[in-house]
Image (cartoon, rainbow over all chains, first blue to last red; front, side, top):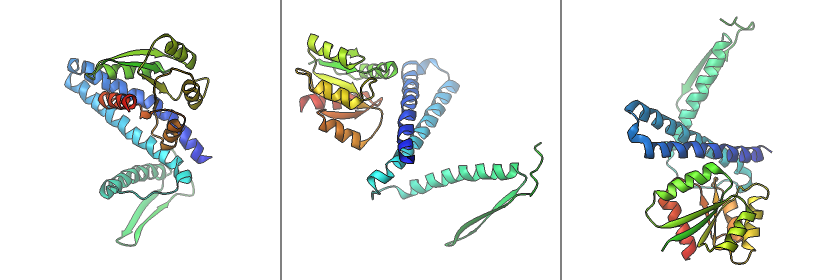
Length: 131
Length: 122
């Protein structure tokens, strides 16, 4: 069921995203010279964000195929893969830290080379009053 | 030689973007667009085309149903299936059902055109 959902969701998300990317490209190509530096920078940022989202959708699609295809061994750029995982981890870390902080708690990590990282947090028994 | 293309695409945005990108490549072509299988078969009966670009996501029938219907109709040109999704299983299925090639929708006009032309020539 999860795989099916991931497949349908990735398919449905891809459609509008492809159009956003397409029309941004049309704007850049046909009207780029009418835009000032700032506007072109915004187009570039929009384009980057769309590219990033496409990667996320492709990852979702890959997830939907895990069971049917099994795992495949392929060459990859391990450095880039690690960077990407670290990027994603940074996002998760920031979200978790925010959640813990909003509940008046504290979170910290202890890391030992070769032994991994332990993440610990404490939350107050009574939730902090929201400011 | 002008490549005569019949595009079967229900989505206006996709048709617009494909038309835009084809205009940017240098080779000569003509493009007629229809939105469903019935209009596609009518167009094939009325004029001659070198290639038929078929969107796999047409409403009403499943994309593969549409493909089978068009393949089974006498006198239709070679079919290149267009899809928004890179899906090897769907690609295999489309080829097995009679499509000449399977193309992922992209803004790369030259690549798209090359693939279309290759499908017609081989």
